[in-house]
Image (cartoon, rainbow, N blue to C red; front, side, top):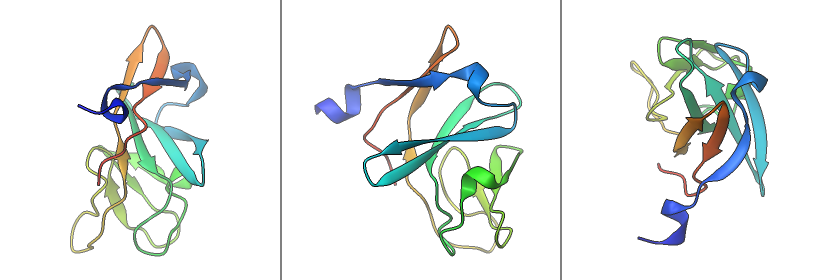
Amino acid sequence: MNALTTEWIHVGQLADIPVRGARCIAAGELTIALFRAADDRVFALEDRCPHKNGPLSQGIVHDGCVTCPLHNWVISLSSGEAQGADEGQVKTFATRVEDGRIFLQPGGRG
């Protein structure tokens, strides 16, 4: 296993993200959106819709997905894949929450 798959980075507090909301962090030239689901699970996606690069962090979080604010594409928070008839995928990142602290693995998937 390489270091990217095992390294965890503290990126914030669960309390900093509203329920069914998002916050962004910068990772070099990449912006990662951290989403908090209604059940307090945290997901991390590249903050761009695969359709027209809309800011997913400004979308509506619902049912394990986020809806892009530009053209209503629905993206799975767990896989980064477009849902329904739409096609495309954004990079996802593993997250974990410990004692209210959010950790992210920088080596994304997808």
